[in-house]
Amino acid sequence: LITAGIFIFKDFIIRILFTPEFLMIKSIILFQLLGDVIRIHSWTLGNLLIAKSKTIIFITLQIIWGLVFSGLSLLLITPYGLKGITIAYLLTCILHFILLNISVKNILWKA
Image 1 (cartoon, rainbow, N blue to C red):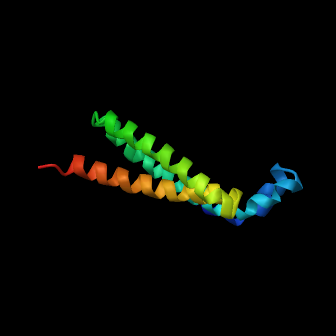
Image 2: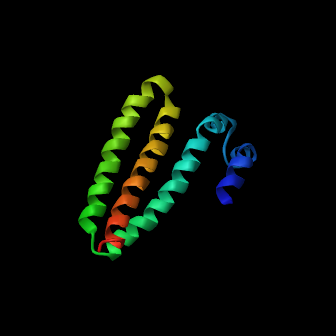
């Protein structure tokens, strides 16, 4: 709900908190907010991995996240500019969330 509220009132929030030069972030805020929502869910799964003493898996997935984010950012910044970085962030968060779900599923449902 908070994310939806920020998106709906983004013009108002940007005008209140920042100078008019920041109005250009309207074009990237959707990707950033969606990535943040997915990232928060990933933190929950990551904490579950740590609680299950699977720290190596957690650290490995964090390193993969950083490498994929860096690579995608470099790949997408040329065609999309600043928007490319936020698109890379969203795509990387989705991949990270999927990998965490697979890892947690394998831990929770082992026979």
